[in-house]
Structure formats: C-alpha cells, structure tokens
Length: 447
Image 1 (tube, rainbow, N blue to C red):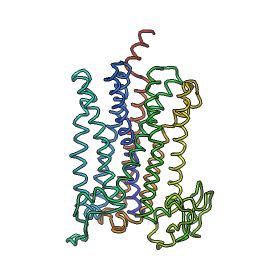
Image 2: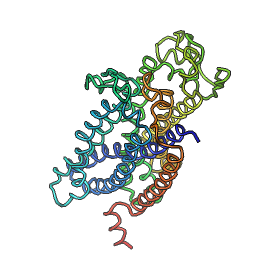
Image 3: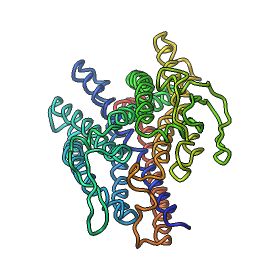
Image 4: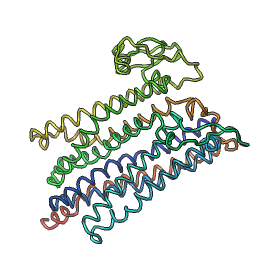
C-alpha cells in the first residue's frame, strides 16, 4: 500500500480515537464546577456526593485522554518529518505554551481534585476543581491554535534552510489569533460541552429508567440538560460564524461542503445528497440559493464553486459533503432532544417520559459522532494541503519511512487502542453500575 495513505490513516485513526476523551473532560470539568459550587452555596450533601461521583468519571476520561494523546506527537517525527521541519518554529512555541499554560495547570491540581476531599478545605478543593476545568479549556485553545494555523497561516515568513523551505515565526500574537482561530475554538467548546452534558444526561436517564438513585439522577439531569440546551443552541451560532470564515479564507472547502461546482453562481444548501465528482454535479434535496443567503445575506449572491479550482487543488468532495451534512443532521437532532427535555422538565413530565429517557441514554453517542464528523470534514476539506496553500500533504512525509513500517505500527496501535477502549468501557460501566457512594451505602443498609 501507498506510504502516504497509510501514514494518513494512522494519524487519522489515532487522533480520532484520542478525541473521544478531551471533549468529555472539558464538558464534565465545567459541570463539576457548577455542581461543587452549588454544594458550597447550599451545603446540600446531595451536591457533594454528585460531585464526587462525576469526579471519578472525569478521572477515568482524563487518564485515557492523556494516554492516547502522547502517540500523536511521536508521529510528527516518524511519519511526517518534512512537515515537522516546515512548521517546527511555529508549533514549537504554540505547543510549549500549551504545556506551560494548560497541562501544568490541569495536572497540578488534578491530585487535589481526585484525592483531596478529606485533606483540604472545601473551598480549596473547589479552587482545584476550577483550575482543572480551566486547564482543560486552555489545553484546547493551544491545540486549536496549532490546527487553525494550518488552515489559515499567519504571523510567519518563509526562509530557506539547508533542509529546505520552512516557516519561521514573526509574530506570536498573529499566529495565535490567526483568522480562523476564534471561530474554531468556540465551535470546539460547544461540541465539548455537549459531550459532557449528554454523558450526564445518559447516565441519569439510565438510573431513572432502572428506578435507582432517583434524586441523584434528577438533580444531575438538570445540570446536564441546561448545559446541553445552551451548548446545542450556541453550536448553531458558532457553526454559522465558522462557515462565514471558511467562505472568506477557504472557498474551495465551502464549495466542497455543499457540492457547489458552478463558479460565481448562487449556491444551494442541501439536506441530503450525493456528489458525482466525475460529472461535476450534485444530486440531492436542498433549497436553491440558501447557502448564498446564509453566507452573504442575499439568495442571488455568487458563491465560488469547485470549477474555479484545478482538480488537483480540490479535496475529495463527496467525503467532505457527506461528513459535513451528517454532522449538521446530528447537531439538529441534539437540539431537538435538548428542547424536548427542557419542555418536559418545565412541565414536570420528564421523569415519566420513558421514551425520551431512552433516547437520552443513547444520545451520548451524538456529540461524539458529530465531533468526529466535524473534524473529518474540516481536515479532509483542507486537502491536498497540510498547511493551506503552502505545503501539500504528499510533500510532508518522512523520506525514510516505509509502507511496511507504517502498516505494522498502524496494526499495533489498532490492537492497543482496542484494548484501551474495552478497558474504558468496562471501568466506566463499573462506576455507573456501582453508582454514587452515599446511595450505594444506603441501599446496602436497606438490603
């Protein structure tokens, strides 16, 4: 097999698996701040035991996130050495900032969060919870900065070195605040908040359906439902802003999102469809001119189409089209679930709506699929560039790595990650089945 394809598959697989966990830790971290804050304000022991239960889940998610994230950095040197030399001066500063401002903050207070319940004062423990949550959010900032720089490079100039051309940092501020960063980080945060919120909703709904820990489940569900409603709604706003940025800075990607071929004509927004790249046509159900209206406020406004670009400068259009629309579809379903949950909660009927509770049990998968599909459409939509309009993916490979070596490492990573996923599901199920400590003790006494 082709070494480029294998290297891309390996990086895509490892980063996709890793990204199962950071969104949950970011969303859960925010909810932990609210839960423990309520405990400090009300002194209600229910909030205390609720926080302790979800801290255990957070610890498990955090551990898997760290373990799976280390692998990605090594691939830069093994499979993508040319890319590493090209962006090393830029990414060195950005990833160093991630270590200083985020990882040390998060990991430094993590021990207090996990093990300091009876060793520090409640307010001190709350500060540790806030710091860990902030660390998780700060970590996302620097990772998204690095990725956004690849999409819309800024704050650099190109220099000729002995190893070839490379990008050299000229303005750290401009590199950080590159044109796509703010849109992308806000979109990532909303997806992460959804992941944490729907995890809490799923577990709480499971307890209610089983008739266990009812008070705990109802209270946890209120926190999760509120955050799910806010994040799902704001995701529309951040997504729209991100699309406007893509239209300005990466028009070929926007054209691929909607399978828009005809250059300088109004663009249709499709609900479902199929792209025939050979014929340069898109078949589907959509609203003519709707994309033009959303981007420019005018249904007759021209949108740059794929025909304005050479075939070798276009991404795989149908993959981008399908992943983008699947993400949008899941996002709309999550909004509906949140709205139905809020309405039923307001009417006092949520606890008896078993059909809705069952939907919420499985809705935990929605943010995960949407997050994965969103990254897939964004990253494949950037192709054939690994650094947009500066460095092609095919030119970024290591020159000495063989296809057999990449294939073997891909198979080994697949096996290891499978075992890690089985372990994660087993341990998470154990914690959910055991339930909150206070209720487990009370049930044991009644038994």
